[in-house]
Amino acid sequence: MSVVHEKNLSSKQKALRVNLDKSIYGSFAEIGAGQEVAAQFFKAGGASNTIAKTMSAYDMTFSDAIYGETSSKRYVSQERLHSMLDHEYGLLKERLEKKRGDNTLFFSFANTVVALNYHKNNSPHGWMGCRFQLTPGGDYHNIIIHLTMHDNDNLLQQQALGIIGVNLIYGCFNYYKDPEMLLVSLMDNLTKDRLQIDMVHFDGPEFKEVDSRLMSLHLVKYGFSDVALFGPDGQNLQPFDSLYQKNIVVLRGRFRPLINVHLDMLKNGVKQYLREPDVDEKNMVVVSELTLQSLQEDQDGDIIDEKDFLDRVDILCSLGETVMITNYHEYYKLVSYLSNITKHKIGLIIGYPNLEYIFEEENYTDLPGGILESFATLFSRKVKLYVYPTRRDTKSIWTCMKFNPPMELIDLYRYLIANHKIEDIYHYNPKNLDVQTDNMLDLIKKGESGWEENVPPEVSKMIKDRCLFGFPCVVLPKKEN
Image (cartoon, rainbow, N blue to C red):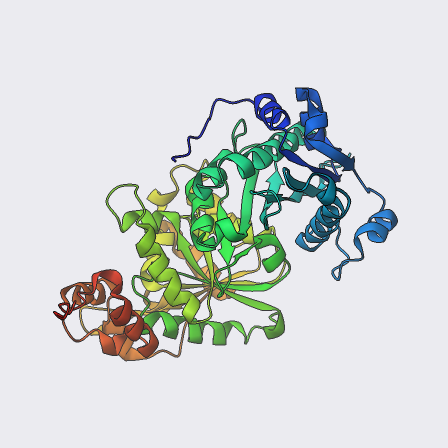
């Protein structure tokens, strides 16, 4: 049976439909921005059919006494959310399973949020989750999200929180067969200038086929967030928690496929980054970044080939990489985002052609201050560009020292070089300069030899074994009995 996304339903209509379904019954625990989600169900009518209990342990001592202390000592955290769900769902089952477990779908909803303060100088965000059954007496499922709130008014933030909470609970019971639709429905009656979702996690028997990496891609593709992050294990990470006050190194690429050049850039770029006096290796995170634009450019039009995306990610994750998907085509936007997370030095590893792109003024016509406005963001923070050389005209190797920016930008470029904002990657394998990713991809698609030597052995094996990037695998005919 196909699932239909009922986009025009209001929050009140969704809450009322849940309330009128007498099989759905559960508890609400909300910390930090009022009990806005539970309030939506009370206001809709018939809430006694749905709500077993609502509570809010605002005081830290009370919260620790109920849910236990968190190892991070942070109350707005995924760890705290999980402890809330564990406690409340366990209590619900303990007290009500014998009485009505045979005909009830139990759920526990929880959130822990920091809303806009009186001085309006904090960063409002929160964790929200729902633990729920899909069959009476069955195993539970979890859907966890992290959200940031952008309304410049506390009451509006509380309203937005109430809306997305209703969307989450309604989606759990009505859209679970289509996780992508469930994800899209979370933003019903909301806009991304009010609220964004930068992490989502599905767990439970019904979601065993859900790919967390695709969910990350969907967050950015649908505009719910400008950034999504996941680790080498493929599990979604909350960007702020994972990158907070870290030394961050980013290598941007299409990685279609990942070749030796990429690894050489990363290895030697990171090596130079670690020589900086204000960089702590133990506090470093290395990130491979894919932009939404690069994923679209590789396809026809705006359609993203999800298999192609996963093929790239499989390779990156197999090499232990942390992968970031962003909607930041311009480097200054990426730096602006990362600089709000960390005050430590950020390293950007780029190829020489990207240095040329950064200094092309026509790329900044949408900014009132043009290229100078972008540079104020890109270079005013603790940021350094590490530039990997390129070979042109078969002989000449082009580096930062050979780069000739437009005449009006020459003095600015010299200033950036003199102040160590831009630096060549000095140690590199000259053989890599003759290798082009697109040429390797063309050879792979044609099944011709010559590409293997330019690709890491484990990557070459994956491409051949799994027929990645259009590699023409030989399908053996079935043996006749």
